[in-house]
Length: 158
Image (cartoon, rainbow, N blue to C red):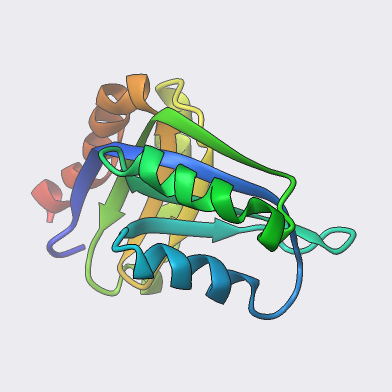
């Protein structure tokens, strides 16, 4: 795997919007407002609707987390969300490489390597070029070591 790298971001917080109506346009409302206020969202994961409700989890810069929460709290009734929760003790850890989605087994290897180091995964997000996990911030160093051992050794052997 060419140009594969492991990256960690400890400067994030997790916000979870619980109990939003599972309907077209709810994400557009939320992220339209967040964007209009000038906040950047680094990761978004949603659950499929269950009993007409969904959860939206996002990672934002730790320097903006309270302002984003305040913005969302002000809209909670309008959004019909049951709660908005903030967790400041998270980090993002990613395996990144061009066309990573075409390489079978990357996610499984990543999850197994993290598990072997006792790193619990809270949220998973994938794209064409990355697999990203939200983990407890205090497990960042073991996570980096695990993933570098698992994936960067591949490059050295090639």
